[in-house]
Image (cartoon, rainbow, N blue to C red):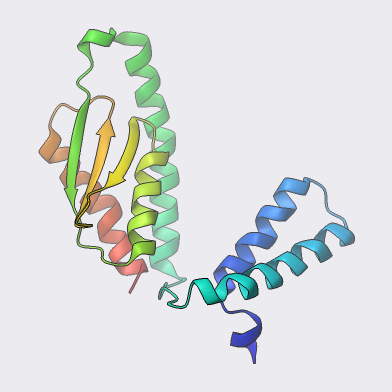
Length: 163
């Protein structure tokens, strides 16, 4: 019964939270509307999204979110230093090719979004075969070390989150 009403409980919760943040004021009407959207939108889209990813909502996810937030803050300072201290011609922009151990489309999308959110990376794309993530980075001294760092910090944790 619960599974039929909430086919994607994580999406339902996220919709409620995002709606309340967008409203930017607490009222019972806004909360009611958020709950209606949190129930109806996943019900409507569930037929387009039949395979639900298996996500561990626990330590692995909390650790992943924590490390991503920490990296975003540190990367902002790093990018600010690059912008203020270096000339454009001194930047070492590179395309990084990251081989993927992840196979779930949701996990790959989460990895790409995480890397794109982190300042210092300009864009990301998936290769046509789906086995590599292509990332354009603003300033990279050692491409192999940077790829290893992304795999260790992000992909390794995502492998534990998406079972």
